[in-house]
Image (tube, rainbow, N blue to C red; front, side, top):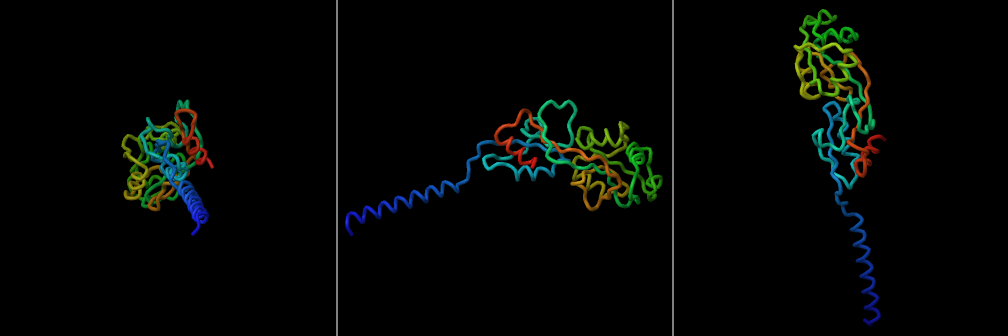
Length: 225
């Protein structure tokens, strides 16, 4: 083999090596440059899947508490909000009962009387002879705030109501306890609960502490599509 042939082969090998390294560099994972802290209320938890799907490749999503979250996802606008908020969807708040309550629909006034404790037997609401068991969320929960303001029209919920600590806990409580009544969103309603009153449709918001930048801005833009 001549000297010129050896040089040609060497140059070819160098070119192939360069192409291989460039291709490897293109396919290598992008380094994470930003961690986006996200908090979602129990009622807004279905939107967490969208958050993970929308996260840019350069960012990592970390679940956080409300105080330190870069993005807080919740139903409806909280009182006194003075930071940016972006609508990323909507959901409906439903009044649901255990099927053994024996009712298929309720009027707005019946809903208020039941949650206020003025109706204590389903027989008085056109159902079976079963005691009413009211379930609510903590007053600080977004879903409860909307229900109290819109559906209860300012009337107080009975002090005998039982407290659900999460949407899943509410669904389980209604489904497993005959005579029970509570509230869930359309997306969180389960098959062992029966819808008896369709409440208000509310926006689902992504709230930030300041004007979003970088990965936070990209994520919110994706969530709005």
